Length: 445
Image 1 (cartoon, rainbow, N blue to C red):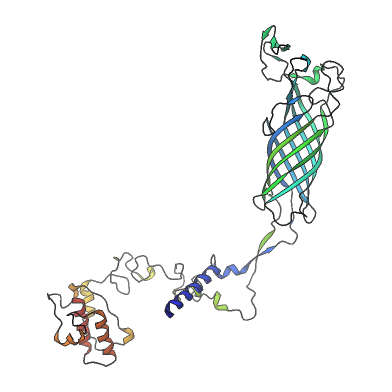
Image 2 (image 1 turned 30 degrees about the vertical axis):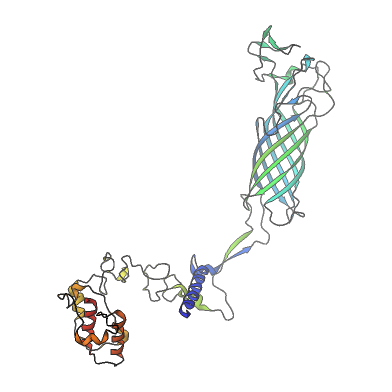
């Protein structure tokens, strides 16, 4: 039981030391990860996509804020302040805004439009850092700002390839008295058409923008944003329906708006890391530091605490426990082995070369009169290698019968060991030749 306790304790100490000094051994003690006191934060790039929904005199083309023509957003933000509760954003949006109306009673209310827009905006963002403290995986935000919007095209669908649409009270659309359908090709620029008697046409406008959403942290440099923004424009002419119209379709006095629902991936590619690895030229230790924990006596890269072979020659490749590799498992390491393909469990000499049965037998029968107990060992041999090999129904020689304590007609291994111990303790009448003969007889049984 005491032996088992020592084995368990040694295993724990060995495994612990190997874990402490894995991946490079004591050299890792020269590297320290430290926090950067004032890291430099550079602008963060955000790439997003989503859908625009229009709010004005006409209806939006879709009924769902997650449907429509894809719109793209590029954002650049810079953290502000020491604790980064605020951010400054600059962004651009490129997309399409569209709407329609359909009426049977009032045929003047059968309009549609599609505008290509490009915006450049800036806003100030607040992320509730003083409320939701710490390194959170999810963080809400709000922002408020403005933008400049330009309309590259402001078109309407008035006709198909056969002619101009005529909307009738019965709900049909006709072209030259032939029932037709809209082709949804916005071919006519209503800025130059001036169909409602408005003197000036809008080509650009200023808007106020409010933005809100959630940021999901993926890594220190990557986050995912789910958000929506509302854009309040200072115009009522996005859809060509305005209260300034003097004929045809005349709108109300409310300004047009649109929303943008999007998802964006924010990438911090240029900021300084929050921590960095410092390398020391030497290991600074003091007090009663135990230098044995970093000792490597044979300089094989495996610390002595985990090294099972302390005297490995310089330059010899070793395994995880510091022992030279022995591919054929014959007990002779590769760098000393003259036969790297010995048969499994073969008996080999000091050079790793397999011994023949005659060589093994010659070694067993050599005339050695005395041997120290610490140098004694036995090599198991088969029946064919024993001087009793010609015997059948082997009986115990008369001088060895007293060793058969249990009288079973067989000299057991325990009985053999007892006789050898008695020989070395000078407690018995056997001579060295008798011990060698006993050994041969035991393996011949």
